[in-house]
Image (cartoon, rainbow, N blue to C red; front, side, top):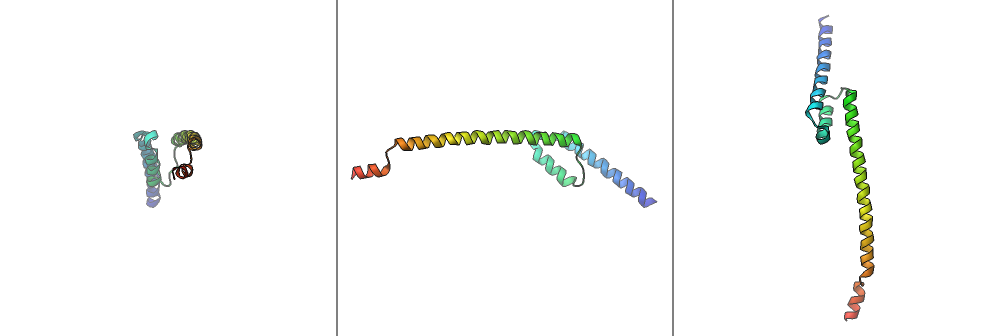
Length: 106
């Protein structure tokens, strides 16, 4: 009887502290700045806990927004690299080759 009561008490306390920890983490961290730290804290301290739906939704939304922003940046950099490559090829075509200038100097 006493063991069952202690088990229930431990489970209730564990659930309460997990919920409290999640609430502290979600209010203490600005998710945009410290998302990695928040996720690592949750994974380290609460390995068996389920995230509340609202917190999971916020994390998913932020990760999706960051993914879209990085994808956009990568696309922009790829376009700029293509432009730079075109300019380099164009300038190389305009410059006389080094073998032609060396043979004419001799």
